[in-house]
Amino acid sequence: MNRASLLPRRRLLQCAAGTAAALTLLKRQAFAAALERSGLGQAYKNAFRIGAAVSTQALSQPNSAELELVAREFTSITPENCMKWENIRTGDDWHWDIADKYVAFGQRNHMYIVCHNLIWHSQIPRSVFQDANGQPLARNALLAKMEQHINTLAGRYKGRIQAWDVVNEALDEGNGWRKSAWFNQIGADFMEHAFRFAHQADPNATLLYNDYNTHLPKKTAFFVPILRDYLKRGVPIHGIGMQCHHGMDYPDMRDFEASLKAYIDLGLEIHITELDFDVLPARSNTADVGAGGQRNSAELDPYKDGLPEKVAVALADRYEQLFTLLLKYRPHIKRVTTWGSYDGMSWKNDFPVRGRTNYPLLFDRQLQPKLAYQRLLALAKTL
Image 1 (spheres, helix red, strand yellow):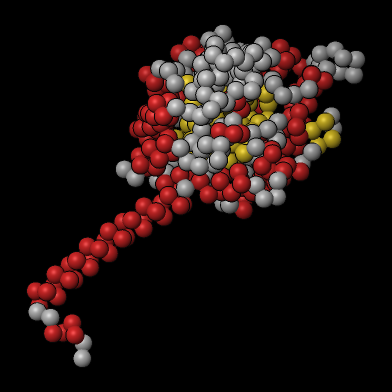
Image 2: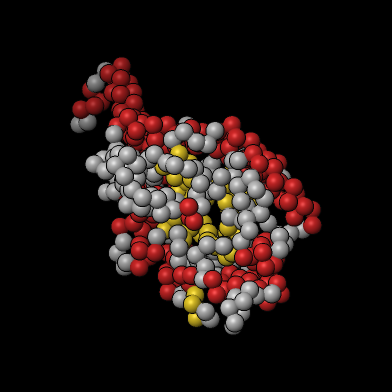
């Protein structure tokens, strides 16, 4: 005989209610645990994609812990270096191995794959801009070389990736166009040509302009009319990559929000492309790689033995502040990508001062989630 049938009806109802409450609690706990296991990218799937830059070192290793972390936590990827001109080709010889592994990794893990980058003034041999006699290439010759590079690189991954950083860092803070070799030898329309070439090479890819310090009012004021003209004339630019190499006390979020709104008002997608927060003392707030090489000192490298709790809390506050703002504009934000996946692989350990111990990302040197990660995960649960 079923002994439960001998229990009074009230007792049965109490047991049933208790069991239901317990099951509800267990379900909530299981959901929370599953959310954490599935990663930050899944937690934000109803807002925007969460991405990370992938290092060449990780892509070169058959069993990389960094790649395992990226596959678990993120839904978008960007190559840190393997597609930059100096890395992917030497003269007319192309080096496809690492770039192919990068795209295959993204496809295997069903990620939003961003390729970085097609045209940049840095990490490119000087010979690209010279003729056989070492003299500056004429406009048309350099345009032809640009078109060939874009057709070959973007064309190789046509239909397999989702977005390209077409032009990188072509603006000079509040001083108009950067006077790069691209600008000096072709003219200001070099960027328009780059976007048209990229669209021809991969008509379905999202094409982005990517830059740092996009929050600067003068930089935004200079660029917005150019973008408005591009869009009016049908130049195929689809979004702005706001790098967001931020610090503990910069930028002013009012300036950042103003520039964010200015680009949104043009109808462009917003991609947060290279997010990190520098917790160390800085002599300047630039992300121009040409400004690196400063000498190290104890004063500039105060946390070699670990990040103090007070600073870890402040870092978490900064991440939470930025994500709260981005969620306000989430219909226009396509993704948020950190520049690197964990502290040990961050470029901020060597820029602008080489050999420092920095803590700018969401995962520590043991690839464990930091307080900033937990804050963002908690924020995601309010969506």
